[in-house]
Image (cartoon, rainbow, N blue to C red; front, top):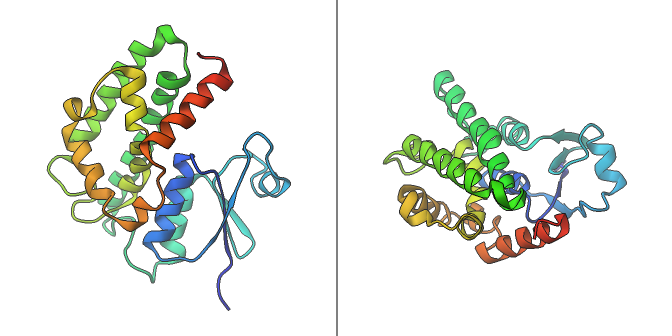
Length: 220
């Protein structure tokens, strides 16, 4: 009997993109259901009653919430399918989890202030964002991916935010190519992977979405 896999998702959610990439990497067939975050479905609220957020992966009727938890679940539930999404070595696995968590706790929150925070705080947010991106650039070093030659959970956690690089540059008035050239080259390599290219919206679409969110939130 084939697995029933449903993904409750939103096109512009970087967290949903993570799950799409992980499922594609593992070649897991799934049904994607787009959610209206302004009018969430009863199905979503029942599947994730604690936070009511996407993404939610529903595997044979059982919901799994929170994107990084879902990515790790996918790696374990389909461990017979290559490639592995986390390193097998315990230390390397812990390190990968650390950097994926760094993206969650730093990049996302800072970019919210850069795009949707008060205008007077944007210069501070821009400097903090560049600083965090440079930390990630140092961790990447000269490796092909954050997992070395292997595309892993850190790449999956971070690459969805690369769809917003043009928006970051526009809102913050800086150049990613100047500030973080290694990350720009890393994005180019990641975009050569079908799992990434098909899961991320375009830079322009992401920018227009964030611009519309600004208007909705009354920032502009």
